[in-house]
Image (cartoon, rainbow, N blue to C red):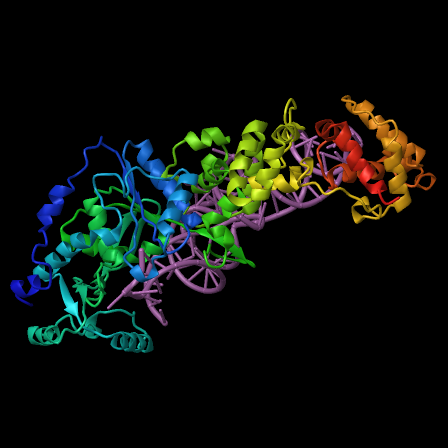
Length: 548
RNA sequence: GCCCCCAUCGUCUAGCGGCCUAGGACGCUGGCCUUUCAAGCCGGUAACACGGGUUCGAAUCCCGUUGGGGGCGCCA
């Protein structure tokens, strides 16, 4: 082992001792049972839905216990950091209500971005080196991959251990020689290396057992790097200890690394921190399921939900229901306020079901007053659909009236809006700027009726048309025009004797609907007509006569 | 190749040895209501992966098989 002077010479001369950090980040003064959790995303692109999923858990647990919820940015792989990712995170976390007070810009345990904490890690790396719990490794990438090939060929576990751990027991002379030559090195943990098994308790899965770690993992990356940073394993141990985290909640892809982490905590002399490993969000692929992937699945990115304008409470409610099934059975308001319980988390991953989310979102939007819906639509449109924003602002009162149709004063409001982007296809026809009059009497939306019939119907409805507010009276105008054109006045009449008519009242109604809305689906026609006003109704019904 | 985790309707799940002829919700589907489309209401469809044990008794416990997921990086 190198002399202490030689080890210290590898580090900045003014590097603090561990005591310095221990004092700077003292144990938190919190009530008993308070949980301190942390959400630690990597800024490698847009935020992942799975991140929001875990963050909801983290934040809820901290808040319900009177603890703290920390957001820490894990950017120890500088080459993968994406410009602007942190800003995007902030927007996304704000949208879904999982932002934190304790992150960069606030909080006594900062900085909260790992690349800003390099000095802290170095203190502890030096400490490991001094204690002989770590050593310098000059192995090249080629040597490492050759070792792995060999291990696979011998059908033994891959890794840096045993006779493949070529620098573990290297002589001081060898090390000094490489150091003198300024060869790049990494710092590796000297694993206790004992064979055997470890058992530990996971808060989600209970007692787990695995082979003890004997792999000398890298704890500090290459000395070649402009800023040598630790690997995840080491940063996790140091940060979660110094930030006084009480519960490490993370994706279950980390399960296999627990034996390493446990050894690192022990070697550092830190108290172990309980783990809760959360199953990932899944995506169906054919009959198989796999982890929701940001690369392959657009719905894995939180931007997907923000861009489509899914209301945040609906998404959060859905995610909470996946976390704890109990919450999915409760009404939204109640479920958002109810605590999430760690012990109720499922152990196998859940499929993200967009159909179910749509249903939840539609139910939620149906509970909102029209004015509020429109405000949300406008907020969304300002960022994602400028044309819609302009069209709505030009006729805001009409837009509110449009939303009122079959929403206000009824027992069962329409559930036709799941997300803000739905407004345009469903209510856009109300707005002059977005409505495209139907001029072609042969348009396929009329369901194949003869163009002359379409035109005659339109003309007859128009003849003496009144903007009646009584639904039956209003519709009587359509019925009269329909009868005059040999449509059955009632669906039943048509059913009894189809040959006596050119069609039923249904087809005739559809013609009027299409002329009025451009769509084969719409809220009750007389309400639409009332909202539009008589002049506009006449304009729209008449459009199909222009060519005649 | 080695290691770990998981396994109830299409989906989310209830179930923690007898209350299970397996319950609920979403979906799908039939009907009712309705001038259309929704909404609403009523009904239907559909699962304990397989094979061995243990037990008077197993969806529940044990073993194995199969299937799925994850890990084995100077990525997190």
